[in-house]
Length: 196
Image (tube, rainbow, N blue to C red; front, top):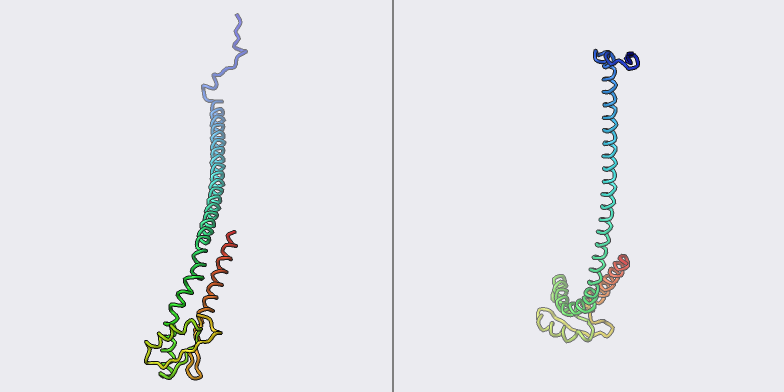
C-alpha cells in the first residue's frame, strides 16, 4: 500500500514553533488593524452624531428665538393697540379737565413768586371770559394781594397773563396740552407703524 503522506502538508514544524511565530504575529497585526478600523469607525460615527446634534440644537434654538421675537412683537402690538384709546382719552378729556381744575393753583403760585420779588403791589390778571368768575372767587381768598381781573376775548380758556408793572408772566395750558396731544399721537402712530 502506498502512503499519501507525501501529498499532505506536514504541520509538525508548526508544533515546534518555527512558522507559528510568524503566523501569531500576522494574526496579532490583523487583530490590531481590525481594532484600529473599528475604533476609527466608532469615532467617526460619534463625531457625525455630535455634529448632527449640534446642527439640530442650533436649528431648534434659532426657531425658538424667532418664535420668541414674534411673540414679543405680537404682545407689544397688542399692548400699544389697547393703550391707544386710553392715552387719547387722557389727552383729550382728563388732561384738559385737570388743567382747568389746577389753573387757579397755578395762578396762586405765580402771584406768590412774583410778589416775593416785587412786593405785594397791584396785579392785573388777564384771562379768557370763562375764567373770570373763578379767578374773582380766588382773589377773595387772597386779601394779601391787590388783584384786578380783566377779561380778554383773544385768550383761550387755558391762558392767563399776570402783570405787575412791566413784569409779565403767562400761564398757557392750552399750548402745553396741544404739545402733549401731538407727542402722544406721534408716539402711537410711530409704534403702530413699526409693529405693522
